[in-house]
Image (cartoon, rainbow, N blue to C red):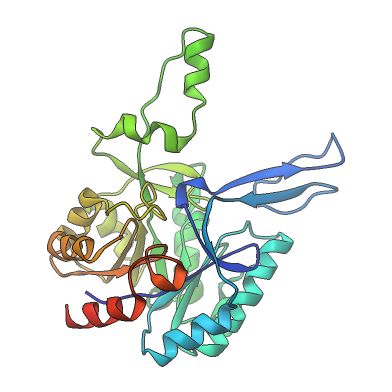
Length: 309
């Protein structure tokens, strides 16, 4: 089990967020202005991304790129968390550029990647591009886009992010009180769905459910297009409360390609559980729990521990 470092960038800053809290809003001085689904500005409209922050670093992308290079930790990922086409997204890219320059050949990048712009990020020095939302449309797999993406960059340089969440059951609202309960945030209803065994891939920076379950069959299908997978268990991402054991078990049972698990690691005991459930087939990334991101797990100790795992 290898350690895969991360650099999450939001509003031009390296930070750690609660994954399920990421959301977009629209502000406008023009009442007739409409939001664009691709996240771009239209007229006086601006898409503003917000998230609950665990940690915001005073250091830039170059700092983290240098640190990971000096500790010989290749295979990590940069994630751009703002909507593509916004000023904030371009600020994210500038931080990513600094990290990639500091660690040539050491980092992947994801967030807003398409078949049309993927080459830009590879030219910046990324070893792979990480993609989810582009290959889905209206919550369904778009095979034409998936084929186009594989043709554009090659299977060996493509990583699919199959991050997942438990599917929230539909609730029938029969009166105003029930209708109000339906509008509860995702975090508020997670505890009501603990009995569900169904995890579904989520897109658009983890905000939208697809109709594609995360299971052995879909992992097999996507493996024909991708060299490896990055999978965040979004319900526990950024919460440092323990891993999603069912997700870890599923990925460990599959084990046909390199898979990096992310979400909920908060202790060395969690790492032991992940190693066991993942049958020593999974790599791991840790965010908010690490000391370099304000957490309690000493970064260098984690690196040493996983090097010996």
